[in-house]
Length: 297
Image 1 (tube, rainbow, N blue to C red):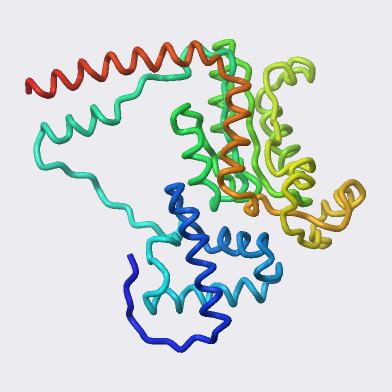
Image 2 (cartoon, rainbow, N blue to C red; image 1 turned 135 degrees about the vertical axis):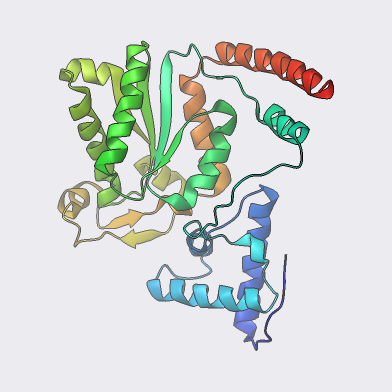
């Protein structure tokens, strides 16, 4: 919703910029997605509307704030994922909570699968795109916000050990920036989980792997996202520059429909779809029975 709280004077350039911003917002809204400031910034950079510069990021933040306060930009179009209010759930009647339960009822759709998957992402800004892409497949998504903590790694190890004991091979589908740290995080995850699993190298590689699915070198060539100078102060930059050169790229620059397609393609490669469909059909039958019970309540 657009709501005006103050009047502002805008230059012709800023009026035009806000029109472009609203068109990008509309593109995301058509896909039922909400932008973060950083995602909006990279969409503007990738369309050659603004240069890839920290000063431009700050200018965009100020313009977007003014545009929202003036009722030009929809308040619900941009979200802050860090400052979220938590409220307890409540219902009007026992029947209303039963209705919620029926709508949320799901079987374990991946029961019996030979592969156990999780998607790990370096950045929280992409979590809504990723979670929507794999919601129907019930793939767990973990947001690391950089290098993961030892607590998160240990908890992941426990999930993976349980899957392996159930004769499932474990794959982490990894999404992160194409920069010195982003590339090194793939190694870091494999090494740290491997230390917990305590297997010989051949056995470990059979049961567990980390697969980078975005942003890859091939995707950089294909989609041509805006480059950034590699962070030479990063201790991992020397090796990165030797292999990839002096530029890096952020995964945020990929359009959401492209990222969605990449993720779903990778999931379907590992999924026994016939087995998955069997669980879906069973879920529908049991949901019907549950709704019949509620109607008779």
